[in-house]
Amino acid sequence: MTSSASSPYPAPVGGASLFLTFKGPRSTILIIGGDALAASRAFAALEAGIQVIILTRGSVCDELKWRANQRQIQLVDWDTLPSTSTSPLVSTPDTKTDAESLSAFLTENPSISIICITIHTADIPALARICHAHNIPVNVTDHPALCDFSFAATHRFADPSTGGKSALQVGVTTNGEGCRLAGRVRREIVSVLPKEVAGAVRQVGKLRYLAKNTVDQIERDGEGEEGEDSGVTTPNRPVPGWKSSVVESKEESSYRRMKWVAQVSEYWPIARLASMSENEMELILTGDTAQTISSYSTQAGIESSLHNLTLSPPPKKGRILLVGSGPGHPSLLTIATHNALTKYADLVLSDKLVPAAVLALIPERVEVRIARKFPGNAEGAQLEMMDAAVEAARRGLTVVRLKQGDPVVYGRAGEEVLFFRARGFEPLVVPGVSSALAAPIFAGIPVTQRGVAESVIVCTGVGRQGKEVKLPGYERARTVLILMGVARIAQVVGAMMCSDNGSGEGLQSVEGRREGRSYPRNTPIAIIERGSMPDQRVVASTLGDICEALDSAGEQRPPGMMVVGWAVLALQGTGDTSVLDEGEEGDEKRVRRWLGGDRWVVREGIDQGWAEV
Image (cartoon, rainbow, N blue to C red):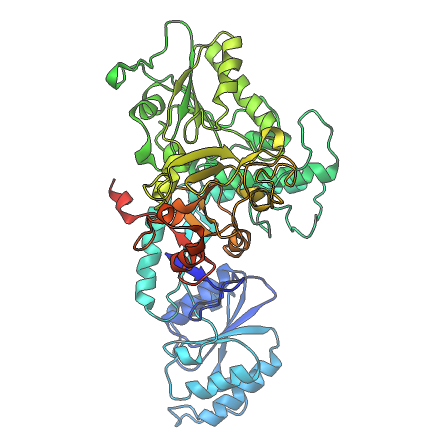
């Protein structure tokens, strides 16, 4: 999917619906009709805790009769209302009289907040006008022009642990383009979701309750429920100053707990969320470094891998494998990584950004722990993982330390090698496909290309303990790949474009944040988020407009990387491989042609061909 913008904010496109979830005992729905559809609408309202009044004339279906006898709904016969003809000879309603009666009824029942009409008579338009005159939203079956709202095709999931209905619902609407098709799309969506999804919702609800009630919850900067899902654009916003050894205030503790709930909800596999015990929840929220995140049993079998790469553990001693999981798509796992996860691992210690599709390959008998790493807790989570690996290896287990991409490309593998070696374990480093090279390919960007980019530099946008790093200067024939810097894109872009005051070096003007020439404002840049995964997003623009472009695209989707240089546009559309053959005076025209006159473009998803690979 491709979208573009020529203004600072996205332009609204009509034809959609405003999705809301509506519930509460203070609301009443009036359903005009007594057929099976009216019963269906009544049941949906009852499940949402809404009071139901059925207004009908003549026959009523058996379900509505039964619910009325059970005092679940209120049945009102239209013939008992004032101003309505009560003559037994009248077989059809008088339109004017029915409209007047409905108006009087609505005046006498101010709690009615929505109306649904399921009957099929000639007086429908007059009844709808009365609803509109009372400023009450109305839905009229088979009359979309009269409707203020519509009913989505919904599914409420069953909780597998209890067999009862859960809090999780999904709804699909085609906005009047195909109601029957909406039902089919709903079934397709439900069929592909994990069976544990309702249980995951239940357990996360318990975790949120514990997080909010263990200490007094506070409001911080208008973020609602402490940043969990109420207004924070990304769960990776830092929790300032947290250390496990420091005594927290109630405010700090509450804020941290809700951030951990957000992290767990965002990154843990659905099945793992559903299986959380209350003891594990409490350990998660207390920050106990000795916690067990997941518990499975049975030691993995020992087999030989292909190509004589020996991964089987030596006798009577455990071992540690530092394994790269690639950029995210399961098809990009190496054979060695796949074998390590599926055949040899007793314990998998995974970084939080390893996608669920990769973790799903791990047998259920294998224990899995997910790093609780977020800004403000990165060092503590790293030490926790390393200590856990050594402890397990000393018990004779094969430990797979699973990292995204390649372990040695900003994966802190070097630190872990030295840490494990000092404690008597020589880890085996298993390479992975680096996202630095793979993600641009999924975005249609070559990191090198004849006539455009003759070299490539891989760097980070975040230094150790959050310090700023020195970025490379501008070279027209070079592509710069910046990992882990999207959260600080304003600082990164500022350092790259800051003027060098004519010195040609720019060191003083940017206070050491860049080494070399400043970048032209029109230099192409692409932000690739969740590269190679189904929800991949590419935001492409120029250095001058990229911050605004990213803000307009909505909430961030970590992990993300930046690709800076003319290679970004080399293969877009009809392509442009003449960058190095022409001077800089033609660059503005080149950028306009690439962006189609807009200031940025946004592309969603990956090539459908990857579904078959």
